[in-house]
Length: 377
Ligand SMILES: Cc1cc2nc3c(=O)[nH]c(=O)nc-3n(C[C@H](O)[C@H](O)[C@H](O)COP(=O)(O)OP(=O)(O)OC[C@H]3O[C@@H](n4cnc5c(N)ncnc54)[C@H](O)[C@@H]3O)c2cc1C
Image (cartoon, rainbow, N blue to C red; front, side, top):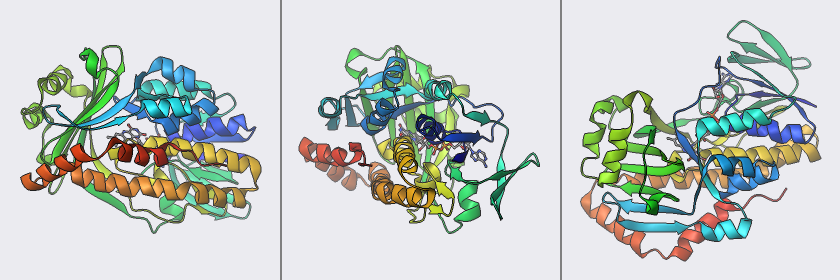
């Protein structure tokens, strides 16, 4: 079996590793000339780390990242509103939650590939059904034949556009700034993710290596992200705890990246004949639960197990059956969470904060229990 993967993101790379380990041959086609290092961090939650344990990558990821034992929601002054204690899950699954630089993770994944070639500078532009499978057309004018395709090409997937055209991208009307800075956090904050919620905006930060902090900031807009300027970032968060202000001020502006937040309205068709979608191309989510990449990593595991057990049509349909309910639960919950986090009405904010404070930790744990449990294949 030969499989062509479109996209060398976290989803495509992890899938190639998982398939290689099953003895299935893959090629990856990536649009960029060089796989760029995104100047941001990422949190690999327990479910993702369970997959990396199965793939033999847990240790190297742990060595290159920083363990996170709680995820907190706070007020803008960093007073605690809600805490998810991750140590329970660490013990249950014998894996930690790891915050790591995206560039480091990418490099670890690339280094792991043995027989798979990553064909960079290959932007897929169209797919045409042929007698023996499919013709993949690239921007360079090159055309190649393919029998089986995995679309791992992200939110704006060309594979999805070509073969599953009825999908909707939803804009959350939130702008997101992300950065990594050299900063020594007080000891108390070194093994936790803190996200401070204010009025129509929030700020999150986490240590990803010694004296290295990854942060993200989001703000609601009415029409588009240009309503806000990176030059005023410190002003938007001037009422926040001084640690947050220090983190912003210590980051070089050139290294901050800006994006509008979107997701994919849940859709029930992830595969057709010998083509299947994985990761963001199938179920892009807003980043409010920090689960987008984790869900792509779970896809990689489940799909590789299914392809190892069944012929292609059955493998794709079993994969969708096993993965769709949880992936959609993440998309839906994350969308609502993003709205609640950005309340602007002071009465609603007060009510929200009271509810967060009063919610028993057992409820928070139960919600994560479902997210962290891998499908049985
Ligand atoms: C602000 C923010 C914070 C986030 N934080 C977290 C987090 O903490 N934890 C977490 O789990 N997730 C997080 N996510 C989500 C996570 O980044 C994505 O879900 C994840 O990167 C999806 O991986 P993917 O491989 O499916 O797609 P992508 O990462 O989008 O990769 C797609 C790849 O395909 C390539 N490609 C695209 N089109 C073509 C084409 N036509 N031809 C060839 N190649 C193509 C792209 O260049 C890219 O390399 C966050 C997202 C955002 C926006």
